[in-house]
Length: 365
Ligand SMILES: [Zn+2]
Ligand SMILES: [Zn+2]
Image 1: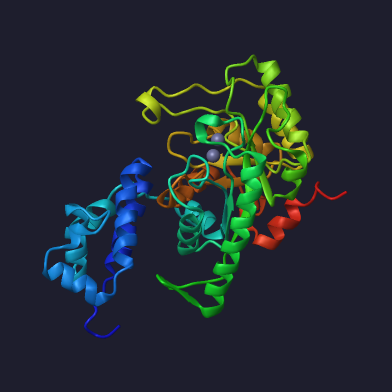
Image 2 (image 1 turned 180 degrees about the vertical axis):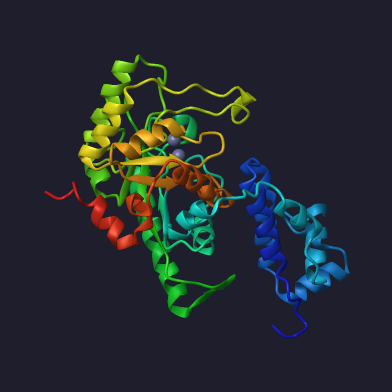
């Protein structure tokens, strides 16, 4: 590493392109090309990289195509790649001051997915992206067994994931100890264990109770039979909320906003007695999730206001399935701010230890 090395890091520029595309809701598989190319470039020494650029042999590397090679060349010349400049303009969200303050108060994200279920990126990439956004922790909440379309984790796979997370946390701690990682200075950061657990038709949770009790945080969500009659749906949700394992009620209406998602058709809200459900959340101290995904934006504002009036805690989460989507939190903050959510009611404005003492509230004994 000498003065001869460009001030820009080509691998970092490729990762930034991927991040911006993810934030703009581009499909994970399309973004993958940039992340794979970044990994291929990062594996080269600066000299190898330069000689490949000179000899025009970058595209011989696995995962590096014409578009990514061009971005690397621009980056090495010290220019911001044109592709990155364009990608940056996608999906940026202007926010009010109140929402920005709320976002600044967030210290983590309680609902994220990795490629262990239906996410597009490995756990370590999600973790490092969350750290780069200034978070102190991220809760990994991959899907539960019954959600087969999303490659939900069996009890066995979830146990394996717990070991993987423990090892990753050791690595992250070592990076924090050294004060730096490959991509710059770092702060202490950890991955908390968790699950997005399906709420079964009878209101029970789709994972072994003993395993749920070991996790740092449990998001419980309805993913099946979203159109059941309102009285049955209310009973189903209240049973899940009353379960001592549940910490956060995920995307409570299950709606999909028109213009996003499969075929752009949208999906109506599930019907249930919101006053009863939020009263249960308040009684059992379960946080109502503000889901920041652009195609969900769940709950709708009228229901979020109702949850605030009921005295519920709130979790402002991304439900990210790719690193760039971790930046969607600001969307949830805007909605929370508009609905009168105060920072001290938001569980992820707490540090990791404080969050864990809250999630441990009903686990003991
Ligand atoms: Zn979900
Ligand atoms: Zn999810």
